[in-house]
Amino acid sequence: MSPAPVDGAVGPAAGPAEERRLHPFTPLRRAWVPIAATVGVLAQQGDQAGRWVADLSALLRVAALAGLVMVFGAYGFLSWWFTHYAITDTELRIRSGLLFRRTAHIRLDRLQAVDVTRPLLARLTGVASLRLDVIGTEEKDQLSFLSEKEAVALRAELLARAAGFAPEEAVRLGEAPERELLRVSPRELVVSLLLNLGIWALLVPGLTVPAVVWWLSSSPWAALVSVLPMLGAVWAGTAGRFLTEYDWRVAESPDGLRLDHGLLDRAHETVPPGRVQNVRIVEPLLWRRRGLVRVELKVAGSNNTVLVPVATRDAASAVVARVLPGVDLAALSFSGSPRTGSRWVVPVWWKGYALAVSPEVFAARHGRLCRRTEIVPHAKVQSVRFTQGPWARARGVADVHVDTGANCTVTARLRPEPEAATLLHAQAARSRTSRASARPDRWMTARPPAPETGAGAESGA
Amino acid sequence: METGTMGETGGPAWVGLPGGLLTLRRTLLVIWTVLLAVVTAVGTGLTLGPAWAVLGVFWLLVLAWGWVLLGRNWRSWRYAERADDLLISRGVLWREETVVPYGRMQLVEVTSGPLERRFGLASVQLHTAAAASDAKIPGLVPAEAERLRDRLTALGEARSAGL
Image (cartoon, rainbow over all chains, first blue to last red; front, side, top):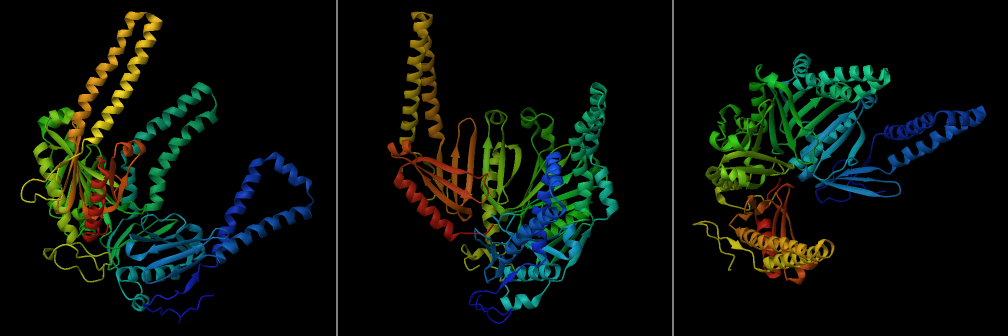
């Protein structure tokens, strides 16, 4: 319907871009869900539906089923037929909707991450769904499904365009080469999950509560019902995590960071350079003696939170050094909260609070059993706040909060008051200078002029 | 109360809030406490005996206390426009000081409710990409609020930075 230009080579003049459809498997998948739901509802109605179905003759029964399949099949087909996507110079456009038309314009320079996921069923049929993480995108703004080859090619093209390459070049470049940084073996993963204190703590009530319930009510069903929520939690903490974190691979490419993981559902995430807002290093109690850590990250608009499920401290800091260039975890020197003031504001736990500020990052630590270290690059700081309650003031301590774009706040708690006051302004100044020298949004375009030439460096990006 | 100058060499040039906000808050306080005092005095006086009407004095004490408190709170609010960021400081017991760089502002909002309008006041609210950094300056004169909005927007555009 559109006067499509010669295949592939869309000029930079950004005429009506070539519109494409999703994989023909999509209608099957879309139709299958409501059919299954209807059958499920009927089955749940039990007796009544059974009697109603028994009243019908065999011919009518087949006809009803065929009708059901036809209606939902038509729905699936039409929704597929009316869904198009197109890539222009600046955006990915997804048009969809049967009755209510909806067009999502996703700006490529605002791209925070790209995820290709292959759920189990989709893997069997060789398709994948592709999602662009931009702030404000919804669940339905993903392309599901594309053939696997197409999804990978599209990801490469989108990343190349987002990086600032010309369109023809973006198509030609293909997948950027990658270099593996870290791989988590299944054994390491299992050991780390078994060393999770929270799961073991759950087992104690998980075993005693059903026993007590059984003894009191003498009904095994009541005991089973009482144990279900805890089983759910244990499942999510062990087997669920095992399934998603199986064969975790972290690799690096000019496109950014690549994370591939999953046993049944495979997920492939790509985080372009300079998108990470916050890195958190988690050290549970039982992991610390073995020198194991878990690394989590925050990217605005994205729901992936894990960077490395488990690794030794050295391996993890090597990965962090790639994610946040120039950051050396071992070189961060943490200073604790002052004993005299903090002891009375937060008893016992005050010892867990510590702060380190390096030329690149602001790092705050808290927690005694499970130690968490939150690291924010200065360039990602949105605002800085100083707060102090009456009790803390009497003790001469104050808190400094650093807000980042991924909607998380890192707090340096219980700093000596004069230090906190100077920290507030020093942090604002540091964030300003490192912002001026940060990489542009389109990361393969030329770097902005050196920071000393002044503000307004990024206006052309 | 002159603004727009930046004491880059010395400390920041702090600007307090105009008196309108204090008048508004104190007026509200007087209306409510006097109303409650009358209700309490009449209610207890009629039901328990005339001597109990003295209980109404309690609300007058609240009024005196609140009068002082509102004054202190109003005096604690101040803001400063620096070359690259905006400072907002507030609170007497729970002190809070916020620094928002101009380049990080996503949206500047000027709001004015019906009561605020009656007293000739407007508030300026700044939004960044982080929801936690809520920076609000209440009770400004509308002209100053608009000047601040225009200046912040202009500075935000000049120093704009990505996420």
